[in-house]
Image (cartoon, rainbow, N blue to C red; front, side, top):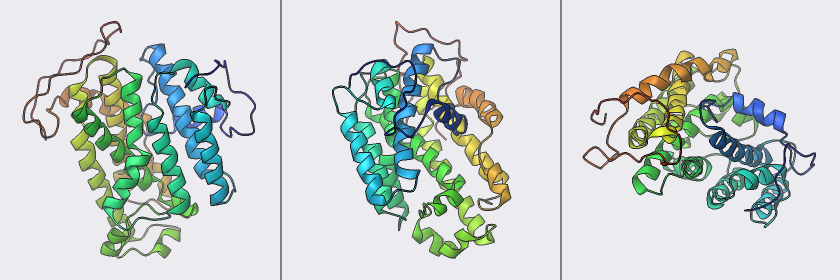
Length: 324
């Protein structure tokens, strides 16, 4: 992708997401999108990626358009994504600061949002994971690309696990909001197993059965997060710090869901969202403790170093430990 640089957001009726709204949305995320300690080059690239991702999500979620109208808007955005000179402000910013990033992960995110217009719920856990492969996993691939981390199957597999876990935890935090959009990301087979009906998702407070289901799904998401966490020990420098931020965000999100004991409908549901201090509390522990081999390797994996021409943060060097 290529295109002219823009200093700020342009007034464009085809781009519903202004810079102020993007920054407000960024502040509510479960993880630090662009930590201030990162070099400016990486912060700019990460924010440019986030702005495109958020714009895609808003095209799929916001407004009063019909599903057909939203699909049309998403496909128009896709066409602009692949244009030699994009016209949307978010895409122009991306082209200016990160022209080297692949378009394929953004295409998968667009596919996920198109799927949202056609699929309101998922029957099984595996079907939901298949959706997350479109809606979540591309984020991690893009983050690795932002930091120039060479493509590696084990790293990508671990990244996918972390991103899927983050997406699942966000779905649990947003049960009420998603229901308002006509979507349910609690698999039907799990709702049946816990005796949760669709009508219970419309109540003012969560039933005991729904709270039990949320606790169950939180544990499953944490297992995925644990499976992907060794990516932190496989990286070095700024990429390691960024990966640790994502993992810490996931742990904070799980903490928040436990804090409300699965109450994701009533007034307490606001507390089900992560607090920045919880993310910061988990970050040192993730950096110190997660020096594990990647899943299936059977041995400690040689860390992927930061690029030599990049500054490296003064991070603690933990001692190796076995995979949990």
